[in-house]
Amino acid sequence: MSNLNDTKSNITSPFLVDQDAPVKTFLCVTTCVIFLYVNGVMIFTLRKKTVFQETSRYILFGHMLWVDTLNLFMSVVLFVCAVSRIFVLKNVCIILLAAAQSLYQIAVLNLALMSLERYVAICIPLRHAEITSYKRTNMAIGVIWMMGLIQCLSEIIIFYSIDTTNTVMNLFCSRTTLFRLQIYKKLEIAFTCVFFVVVTFVIIFTYASIAAVANTASCDKMSAKRANKTVLLHLIQLGLCAASILVGVIQEVIYVYMFMIFPKCLSSLIYGLRDQAFSSLFKYYFIFGLKKQNRCNTAIGGGKIDTN
Image 1: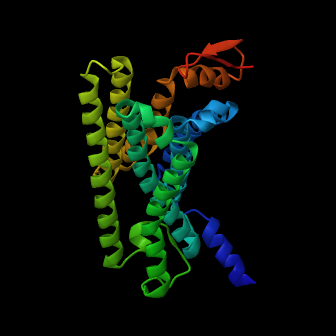
Image 2 (image 1 turned 90 degrees about the horizontal axis):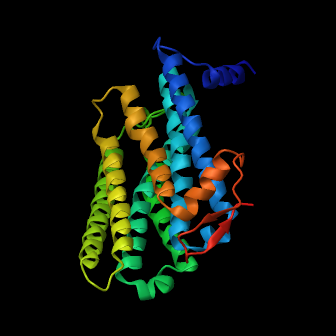
């Protein structure tokens, strides 16, 4: 019984080495709660209208919101554990790290899907409805989830089958503490490089293709211009994701805010506010419907969307 109590205390008791840990934790958690609320309102808005649930563009946007929200939550949990020096059960730690890594890679791959959807809408408009149907969009999301889970499943298999370096039950939860073998580092580098090269190629290809089509007389130049800005936004998002890998020398708090919290929140917010059909409803629900608004314009088909 005493051993069980010791185990519980090791899991829940923080070892505060950094005197500024409470301040860092408070600032990080407070900011994240605000961003989680914003993301939650956007997700709620997407669930209120059928058109948002059946159109491929909004399906992918909603998927990005869910992944970024979960990724943000996981990042905050790991950050709080790191700053507070909380010891975590080994099995719980591997689940947290695997989930965080998978969500990160899925978020990167989702940028490629969203760029391809804009490419089809502008460059192949006559087949857009066929290619980006509800079924095919969800199949594509399923594919990137399978791709995003490959690394974490490989790491879990290696950890429980051949890794004998971790014998303690409770530990400080981080990739360097848990995954000590060189094969983990090689896997991480390999998957990261492959995914970033593929997604970068897709985004640059779609951006160049849309820009080329925008110069033709048969194209809706306004739609093409907006699509190009959207793809450019995805390229910036990808750059921020890449920066989160390369900025190990940046101070801890700056790193967390600039490359973990803000990219997961601002990109979704900017993407949503740029869409007329979505932004009006989002603003209405964001203030709990306090500002009476009977109808709002939508960019889909030039119709109206009720807020009531």
